[in-house]
Structure formats: C-alpha cells, structure tokens
Length: 370
Image 1 (tube, rainbow, N blue to C red):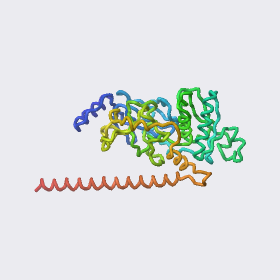
Image 2 (cartoon, rainbow, N blue to C red):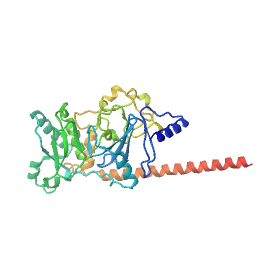
Image 3 (cartoon, helix red, strand yellow):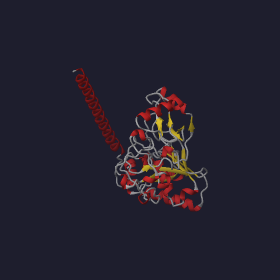
Image 4 (tube, helix red, strand yellow):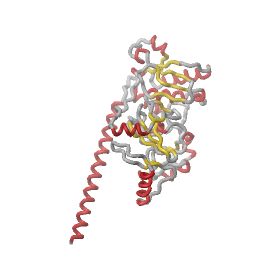
C-alpha cells in the first residue's frame, strides 16, 4: 500500500496535483479496476450496481479504505462491513450480479402489517400517510383488508407479501421495491414522525421502488461528503435507473442538514464532484462554503408528495382511476437509446482525436527527417 501511495503521489506531483489530506489508494481490484486514487470521503462501487442487494462499495475515510455490502435497504445509518478482499476476489473471478431490476407491487397494491406497538398519535399519522399516498393512485391495504379484497389472489402474492412495519430499531429505513418474500423490512421509530407523516411516506416510496432524488443523474444539488448523516450508498448517483424530471422539492430529497445543498449562483460554471469522483476527474469537491443557505432550505421537505413525486408514482404504476397506463417501459427504452447515442458520439470523438494525434506525430517526424 505504501509503495502504491508513493507512486501515486509522484505521478500526481508530475501532473501538478497534490493528493488531499486523508486520501487513499486502492490495490488493483482486478477485472479492469486498477489501483485508484481516492480523495477523503470518496465512494466507489467496486462490485454490482448502486442500490443493488449484494453490491459492494469502497469508501476512503481518513486515509483508510473501508468496504460495505449493500443489503437493499435505504436510509440506514450504516451498511454491513465486509472485507475489501471479497470484492477483489469477485472481480478477479469475473462474477457479476444480474442488472438491478426493482420489482413493482402487483396491480399497484401495497400491503402492510404493523408488527410492533405504536402510540395512538403515531398510528393516526400512519393512517393519514396511507391516505395521502393513495391520492397518487396507489392502493394501500392492511393484510386483513387484502384477504377481504375481490382481487386478493392477484395482489401482494396472494396476501402473503407485505411491509413488516416495526419501530424496534433506531432510524427510519425500508427495503427498496417489492421483495416477494413475505414480510419485508420497514422500520419507523417515533422520531420519524416529528414533522408529521412525511418521513413515513418517504419510506413507503422506497418500498414502491423509488430511490432518492439527490441520486438523480441530472441533479443540480451537490453532496457534502464530510457532512453525511447516513450510509454513503444513499448519496451515490443512480445513473442506470429509470428517472423522471429532477425535482428539488421532492419528498425523496435529503435536506441541507443531511449533507446536500444547492450551490451559490456564482458557482454556476463550476463542475462539482459527485461522491464517486475526485479532483483527478476534473471537478471540485463540494464544501459548505459553496452552498446557498437560503435556496438550500427548500431541500428535504417532508410535508407532502410533490407534483413530480405523484408523476413518478404514476410512471411506475399507472393510474386505474383515470385508466392511464404506466410509462416506465417507454422511459427505459428512451433513456437506453439516448445513452447508446451518447456513447457512440463519445467513441467517435475519441477515435477522431486519436487519428488527429497520429497525423500530427507523423507530420512532426517527417519535418524532423527533412
């Protein structure tokens, strides 16, 4: 590790770059991932896809590389630790996970079962939250209600799959999407209801298959890697996901108190690093000084679903009341097509640049020979 670090430092100095305090250098991970410089707080997914159960991501914390394994649950304060050699071994063996395909709840029906005791006040807020979510076109049923429904054989795995709502662990977190394996993780302690039912509905949206808004590839907010409040995987950009229009007032966006902010207008031309990039990628690592305090207060609202949140739910599940069908497959096809077009254009530019470089070298050699 010391030899690798020394080598990186020497290369960095040659290129006019000084490694930041607390930075790290990874060992060769195999399968195309060579030794890499990490700025302090930088995160890289080294196996699998962001948010995918079983994926492994590596974080640089004060000069030390630490690896965590995704368990498919969002908003937890920390993911399970794993030996970084596990990721290295998987890469060298060429092991891969199937592309992350978040399952959707059949017929747009979300079932739940309250498994621990909640205060009457919180029970009331949960009911209000369920009603609010139903305003988007989703049906929310208790397991008992599911068993009495006319379409009980078509929904929630025949009324065997549900959110196992509990409050016996610290924090507010939920498994992403329909797990189809009985009771799935959903924890909301009393503190999750401080400002009403908003945080509860936030977790319900994760259960429906929706990720954080600040993971949007086209976001305008920036991530302050030295101020993160929960596990790093909650801040990684989800570039392979199907996405709708970026919405900074979304119920799914973290607030300025959770390490996210809107930059000041004077930094409009600055390219800020996402949490998986560093200075060597030609970007600036965001700091609190870059934040617009007033504008950032708009982030992280937990009052109600935004208009775009409702549109996202309808894109995933459609709306039976209006007869509108889900548009997720159309969105996926459009985004895959756009990505292929961008990749093709990028390869074409690289090829053109190499060709131009070769011509310049040949012309220079000919000039020297003459």
